[in-house]
Length: 182
Image 1 (cartoon, rainbow, N blue to C red):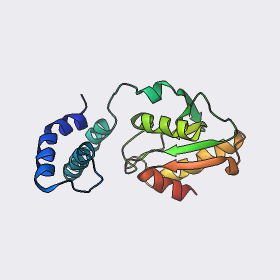
Image 2: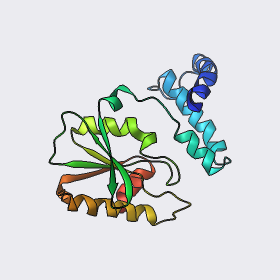
Image 3: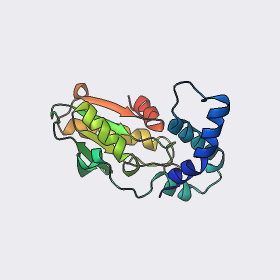
Image 4: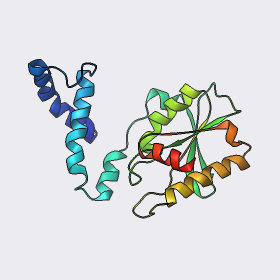
């Protein structure tokens, strides 16, 4: 069982009691969402004290593939020296592509840790998604990540995808990388 799920199981009774006594933190939050938010809030205070190698193991555990990942064709690709993966749903249009940059504060996370989310983006967009494992800090300080973003777009152009057929997406640090790449 992964660490986050274990912490959620441990904190669920306290969250349930708090909700009974004073109500949810936000009216729209389910008990499960509030438990996740509590784990993340408490974990943020301590995660920065862990060595980076441990942080990377926590964010990128081995986990079974979800149904949406199993329904997605995933193929490794070398994007001009940057490891990447194509995520293609069965009903994909081939005339456009989404580039996905994972989150993780530019220092943790990977295509592997975000496989489920990337697969969902591919199915929602009904087109291939190219996700790249851009270089991470501190081993590769800024502007390495932005250089990898730009290199990815240039590589796509060589593959026949002009900028007008490419959408950039990402969450957290990945969204910042989208903006800096644009």
